[in-house]
Amino acid sequence: MDKEKNHLQKDEEYEIDTLTNDRLIKGHDYDGIRELDNDLPPWWKWLFYITIAFAIIYSIRLFVFKAPDLIQNDEYQKEMASFNASNAVAKAGKTFEVKLLTDKASLAKGSEIWHKICAACHMADGGGLVGPNMTDKYWIHGNTPRDLYNVVTNGVIAKGMLSYKDQLSDKARMDVVSYILVKLQGTKPAHPKAPQGKKYE
Picture 1: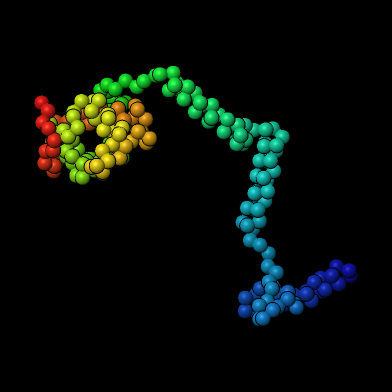
Picture 2 (picture 1 turned 180 degrees about the vertical axis):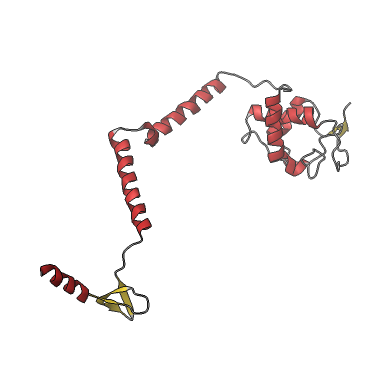
C-alpha cells in the first residue's frame, strides 16, 4: 500500500509531454521553458565512472607509490642533469670534426634533412630555385665540406638563407653537407638553374 502511495505521489510530480514523451517536472517552468527530468545516456554515465576510476588510480600511484613517471620535478631534474652533462662536454673543449661522411646512415639522414628543409629553395633534385643550383661545378661560397658546413651553420642572411646552427646539430649539418657533395653533385636535374659563383674543377 505504501509503495503504491509513493508511486502515485511521484507520478503527481511529473507530467508527460504528449509530443516528445519527455518527462516534465510540474511547477518547474519559467518564461515558457519547462524543466526535464530525463535520465542521462548510459554512455555518458560510464564515461563519468571511468574518469572517477582513473582519478583514483592516478592519485594512488602519485601520492602513495610516488610513481617517478608522474612526478614532474623528477622529470625536470633528469632533463637538467642531461643539459648540464652536455654543457660539461662542450666546456671540456670537445670539438666537432668537419669531414665528408660517406656511410649509408649519414647520407640517409642528410637526404631526409635535404628534402625536409633545403628542397624548398634548392629543389628536391638540387637544380636550384630561390637558392643556387647544387649539382653543377659553380659555387658562391666555395665547394669544400668546410665551406658548405659554414654556410649551413651561419647562413647567408643577405641572400635569405637562415642559420641552422640552432635547428640542426653539428652531425646533422654535416650529414646534409655530405649528401650534397656525395649524392647531388654531378647529377642532372630536370630544370637546372643558371650557374652562379666561381667554377671549381
